[in-house]
Length: 97
Image (cartoon, rainbow, N blue to C red):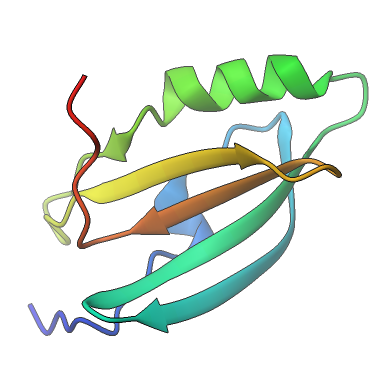
């Protein structure tokens, strides 16, 4: 498949809902792999709490892979003060409930 530990999810792979406006994406790397941090703001007429709930419902803590790219994407959502930071990576595992 050509996957490397330097791979990080793209905006298209994350599948953000239409209520989310991605204002920037930054790839970062550390020991073990790379990830992408997306700055996400609510679309017009959407409250931040509503956007967070929708992201948590649609993305959850992981996004399953596809036939062409079977890697699962781990998802982490944090408040950033101006919107939400959504991090996606191919290598970490979500925390157990």
